[in-house]
Amino acid sequence: MALVAVGVLLAAVSLSGLFPLSFAQAVSRGDLATGERVYKQNCFVCHGMKGDGKGPTAESMVPRPQVFTNPSFMFRVTDEYMFYVVKYGKLPVLKREILDSNFESLTMPAFGHLFEDREIRELIKFVWAFTTGEPQSPEWREIFVQACATCHGEKGRGDGERAVGQPPPDRFVSEGQPPPADLTDPVLMARFPDDFLFALIKEGSLGVNYETTPAIGHAMTGYRTMLPFSQALSDEEIWSVIQYIRETFIKDP
Ligand code: HEC
Ligand code: HEC
Image 1 (cartoon, rainbow, N blue to C red):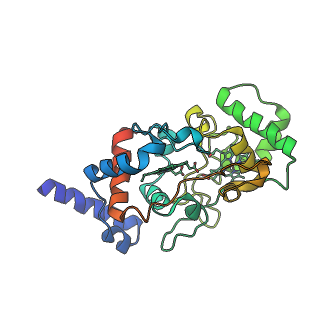
Image 2: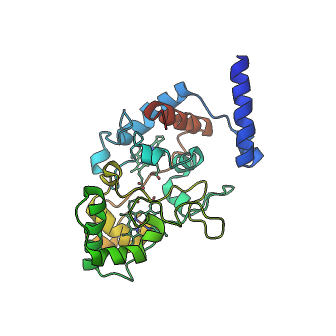
Image 3: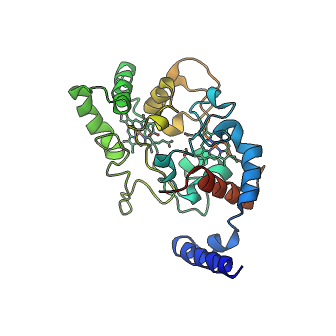
């Protein structure tokens, strides 16, 4: 018991350095058993029992649910980011609508005014070649470097200069915002069908998150990123499920 208490104390001390005291003190970080129950009741249908993003409804979702077994995602996100996404949904986090948070999210911008549809399709081919290792045309490399590399990095690894912490006001990624995914990682890229990428590049992340997206020219159920669970779950249950996800699906760095 004493050891646990010391652990909790240390955790509280280190947290208070990073976050406003009230935030660190106000909520308990939950427990694994609660997390497991919450996950098996609320999350597995999309994210899968094993956290592999292959739940029963995953196929019909655009983009596909996040893969918690993937280190390139899990080591880039903070628990606080995950907490806010689960509580409020991803869109309000991207739109910086979360009061009292110090998140500064800069999202994927829209490029519809710069590129014609045909060119966006070329770009998507170019982007996929990061994943497959196929040769990339020098012409499109130049365009990618100019338009995309500040965030996604010249090699597509999500490590462009704006994506790795710069001091404010230039900083792209805050404690809360994960950098753009590594385009060379097949597991992460498999979550995005081409028509989603098309709409994302054309309209930006804030543009593609609603019921219908004009960019793809036909009605579909629409792109839905993570929805809010604040009606269904308490803060403690949300912290518990984050703990469960961290400790069950990913262990060593
Ligand atoms: C209806 C399907 C669905 C359910 C249920 C669901 N999620 Fe998600 N979740 C998604 C999708 C889709 C994404 C990917 C969003 C994106 O890439 O923009 C996602 C992403 C996430 C992310 C990462 C956010 C990011 O930036 O990629 C976290 C964390 C998460 N979900 C946690 C949970 C937890 C915890 C639960 C259960 C309380 C849950 N989800 C239930 C569909 C779902
Ligand atoms: C201002 C920074 C920024 C620029 C410039 C930018 N992106 Fe993004 N991009 C992002 C962010 C952030 C995401 C993650 C979106 C999310 O989580 O909702 C993203 C997502 C993506 C994705 C989906 C995979 C992923 O990383 O999640 C692709 C593909 C992509 N961008 C391609 C491009 C292309 C092509 C260009 C240039 C035409 C470009 N981006 C320019 C920030 C940027």
